[in-house]
Image 1 (cartoon, rainbow, N blue to C red):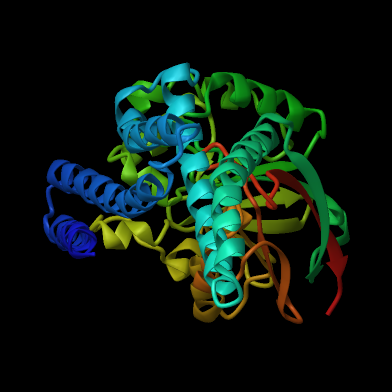
Image 2: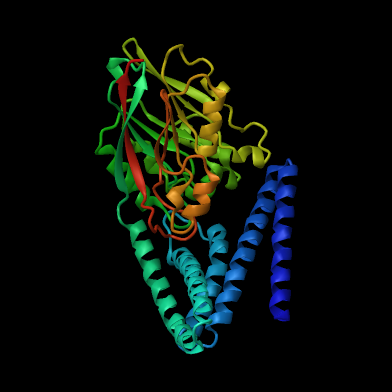
Length: 414
């Protein structure tokens, strides 16, 4: 018991160190230092949290001759996974990055399953010790098998084509000339260690088959620098739509420490319309619609002085009485937008991944004002939160399936 307490105390000390690092990288204005300290903070924090789980799993399964080696290998690969994210980036994911992140997913499922089984064992103890012993043996075999099955099932969900969702959003004052304007909403592609050129090429071809009027990308497009991923995203220049492809940053673009280069590359080389607290008005005869986009709130947390969400600046100059479609990566920023502006008709967001895999749904749901799907915030304002196309970290999707969405704007006179 004393040894367990000392181990937990050491791990808690590492967690406190991670929090200190957060404050350091916020206060330092030099981007390079911010980036290095941020990486240290993320790795320290994640390794600390994973260490609690690893210690718990090893203590539980070290008595099992069948599963001990499997658990040890899973633990090692789990702790390697987030280092692979920074060290092995190429046009397409490799075995070196996929396997450790799969192990991370299995690690999470095993921790949760073992915890549930231990709670069950505790509940059985008051009735009979014999049942408790039998339950313990059952747990040592049943939980790892279930974890492996859930990991593979969740991984298959990421390999299969994303779902195509369709929503119709009434827009007050939308000119009949723009009625049924078709927007393809993409979010959270996360090109990086586990998503690459093959997926981007497929996505471009798939989107083009729908012949949209506009395409929007609401952040978290990439997880590394332009230098590492320029070829992987190159085919985005071939997205075809009547009014173009609009893009705003997500929190992960700021984690790359290369956000300005990404904005320049996407705009100048790939032809995307980057909305950096800016707007773009489309016209159909005398009818108009304002697409506005704001930076992600993560910019403020990382002390990017020239990046922060500014809905007022983004919409300044939009013609009076013209409907506004706002692109804002995080639902929190969507809420900020609605509070800040006298009028916004539709906010398109992402970020939540719809929880990505259960039970992460619960904290994600509690942490965001809008979780997934279409919300009617007021008679004239809607928010749509995409579940996203891919994933972050473990290549798993469990009870939250990836999607891209056709958003149809329907004229609704006030």
